[in-house]
Image (cartoon, rainbow, N blue to C red; front, side):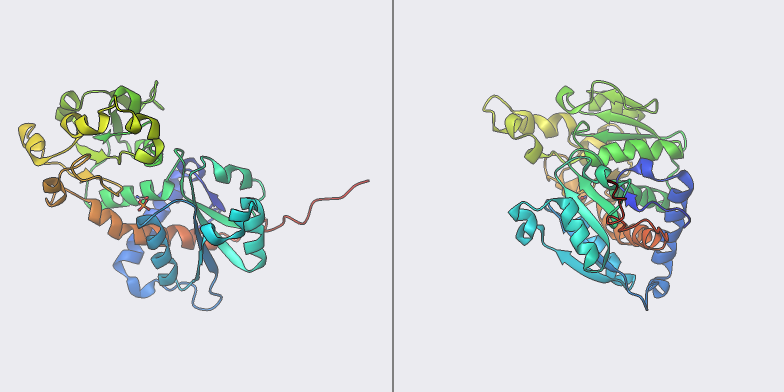
Length: 322
Ligand code: CP
């Protein structure tokens, strides 16, 4: 894919044509797994560097990398020299000198990859950074919605939960309006931004009021690790009351006559965002999102590795003047 970026930090790093190209390539990988090994000879090295916990993103990238015929390096951040205080920039330069071509990074620090956009030490993919963005999750969600045959043009997706801090929510708000989908961010006041991020996104504090106008539901995980203050406070009963006001269960959907698809990026706090009966029903698409994550991540890794960017790793070449 021409001019595919060497640093994918946010949805805004991709053009609409590049996004459409990724959707086509993901479908090809899913339909014809036999054609997946596109690097049989030079076998690039791709590393995962996860500075925060992960099951879905880390393992699906690892599987995607091996299906493409690349070599995989599981870079253990906790036992690396990062723990001795080495910077992420020096770490990436070191890995590049060892032959690593691309690194997927998850970090609790928002915008960590921005510093590398001008002079990438190697090709980089954001596997989720703090409260900023999780672009590959949003792209695989879009692929899943289109694969299910869902019409997005003029439809309304309710994103329910901690919309303020959700990197998945931020990426979806940038991505889905490009396909004509309107978004309603739904949650308690402390989980909503003060203002809508763009004209296609509206805000609501009432799931009961919003549900009748929704076409699709996307629940977000309550991120306890980013709200230690709220959840530890003895005055707070946000979690205890959350399901009653913002949780999705089959009774609620029946009451509103809404047999509509329910998405979630995982991991789900069962009984909080979604009830077990929703997860066990055919409305729940979370397992299909997980399955499709392999194909979208194969498409992203393949497109980036093939972008022929000659500026990669040129960190030695600053001009010394007197
Ligand atoms: N959706 C997602 O990012 O899940 P993991 O934290 O398990 O990677």
